[in-house]
Structures are given as C-alpha cells and as structure tokens.
Image 1 (tube, rainbow, N blue to C red):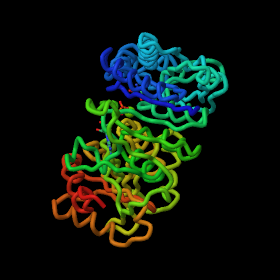
Image 2: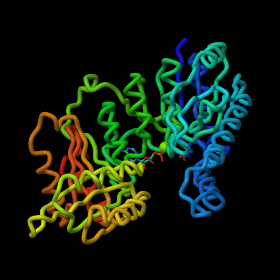
Image 3: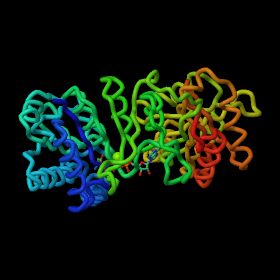
Length: 417
Ligand code: ADP
Ligand code: ASP
Ligand code: MG
C-alpha cells in the first residue's frame, strides 16, 4: 500500500475544532488504504506569540544581536502541542496514531539556530511503523543538531519538514492550507487571481523566494532536488462531496500542457534599499563594499551602480532584507574611511514586485509589458533585476498592491490560458 505525507498549516490547526476537521481528512486517506505521516504546524498565531516572548527575555532585550539556541527551544514548542493533540484526536476517531518529535525521528539539521537546514532524516523506523498501520504525527519546524540541540527551521519551515519527510519515505506530499492551491498571485491582494492546475518546480521556487508565502522556498528546493510530487490544497472540505477542494500540482515543466509566458506575480515587503552616494568610481571599492557585507552574512539582492556628473564618482544602490538594513548601514559607516563616500541613505519604504514564468526564456517583450503597465499607473522603478524566468522591480511600498494588480491584468492572468 502507498505512503503519503499530509501537512496541515497553522489555520488548519488553529483550534480543537479545526484539528478535528484536519484529522477527519487524515482518517479518510487512511481509510482509503494510505499509510500516512501527518506533519503539523503550531496553532495559527502561536509561533508569533512564542517569538514575542523570546524577544522580551532573549538577546534582543539585552541589546545583543547574537543568535540564541534557546530561541529554537521556545519557538518550536507550538508544534509539539499540536502534534500531541492531533495524535490524540486521531486515536479518539479509532485510528492507531503516535507522535514523533524532531529529536525522536531524528530530523538532523545544521546548527544555524533559528534558520537551520535539514541534513538528513532516517525514514526507516518511521516507515516501518506507518506500514504496520500506525499514523505518524510529526511536528513541523523542529530539528536537532549532531550534538542534540533543538533547532528551528526558519519561519514557514513546516512545509520543509513535510517535503523532507516525504523525500525520506519516498512518497508524495500534500500541503493543506487556507487557500485551495497556488494562485496567479496572492488571492488576498487580487480577487481575480486564478488557481493554477499545475506549476513547475522552477517557477514555484522563484515565486516562493520572491515572496509568495504559500510554500517555504526551501521546501520547493527539496521537492525539486528529490523529485517529490507536491500538491497544495485546502483543508476546508466541501460539505457536499466530503472531499478537499481544489489543488495545484507542483511538477516537472514537461508535465505541464498549459503553456504560459508568465505564470504568476509575487511581491515582498521585506526589502530595504541602501544608497551610497559619491563613492570613488573604482572596482576595488565596489568589491570591498560587498566583501564586508558578505563577511557580516548580509545577503544582497539587487545592485545598481550609476555614474555621477563628476567622472570619478559613482552612486551605488543595493537592497537587503529589511531586518539587515540597520546593520548594513552601520557597516558602511564603519568602513567609511576605507571606501570614502559622501552619504549613506537607508530606505525601508520599498517593496519588490516580480513576474515569473518559464515562457520568458523563449519570448521577447515581457519586460516591456511590465514597464509599460507600471508606467501607466505612474509607478517609478527604483531598481530592476532579471533572471532567465523572472523580472523583479523595486518600487515605493505604497504602490505594492496597485502594482501587483496592474501586472496581473497586463499579462492577462485572470483569464484561463
Ligand atoms: P499555512 O499556515 O497553511 O502554512 P501560509 O499563511 O503560510 O499558510 O500560506 C498561505 C497564504 O499564502 C495564503 O493565505 C495566501 O494569502 C498566501 N499567498 C501568497 N501568494 C500566494 C499565491 N500565489 N497563491 C496562493 N496563496 C498565496
Ligand atoms: N509555526 C511555524 C511558523 O509559524 C512554522 C510553520 O507554520 O510552518 O513559522
Ligand atoms: Mg506557511
């Protein structure tokens, strides 16, 4: 009989009633003969509460920006509670079920506390238990280092736990959430957004990393690397059919018949722009700026360098995640005597809007459509970056929703392809 991983997000685990409804979906799969591992998130809002508590007593409160391994112990606790509650609920429904905490499986990770990466999951004992008819319930988001310290996988990490468990078990992974699939853009921003029947791993990876939070980026990377078939669907069951509704399959590009140039629009507000004005126009100075940022573990996304009127000076603009903006500016001030610039500005009121589609590889004019649509709404582009299958622009954060809707319309995403 076949195995299946089913992951339930925070909304699907929000209270005891929702847990019961999610458990009923698990029971239906088990009744259909599947050997199921359930991966659960904490109750909606719970992880935020736990993070707030760590802020109040942890390093941030003491003004020390160091990572704290006890942070992981606290924030992963929400998943332990829901795992136990899910296992108990399944037992009350007459199923055989048990929980497997991160350290019990174990889910081995590196020691990057707060954003640990999974190195290995041994699926042998887990698979044997499932195959003997016991539903496995696994808290998402949790891992353990080589020396048995608890780790957290980074926000939204239960998706990654689920895909990693599916890879270890060699089976598909169904992600149950509060939307019935992956849409052409966030349906909370554009009501005319359309559910995609299928989306390629590559496009999903870009959409996730550019801000579509329906799947954590790392989960898509893992699914792509281990060829895990992933489906995103709603945990709100259709009362008439008793089945889950909708569904988007994440799969290989050649399994998709519907051909589109652009598949989706994503946005991220987690951006900040740092501008260095009046920098010496020399390659070694630019190299020093980015070397220092890399040493401080600050990821840079977009980069624009432009000449000034004076031939030997240049302006350098780059973007970083919002939480790194202060640190980046302080770093620039610290090396001011080394690189000598006139002024360093930080702007956190910016957002990144992106269009993604594998069809861009073979079609011209995609950028023109994007720039024209933004220009028609009077939205100024502060920086642009492209890859083979995406174009991103940095804009004033106030225009984020307007830009998403304008681009969604410009590429005709509301109409079926
Ligand atoms: P969960 O708690 O189940 O993990 P999340 O809140 O992390 O759920 O992710 C689901 C949310 O992702 C949706 O409610 C939706 O607002 C958002 N989202 C952003 N972009 C998209 C998209 N392209 N398609 C579907 N949902 C999206
Ligand atoms: N509960 C964790 C979070 O809110 C992990 C998850 O739900 O995916 O980030
Ligand atoms: Mg999520």
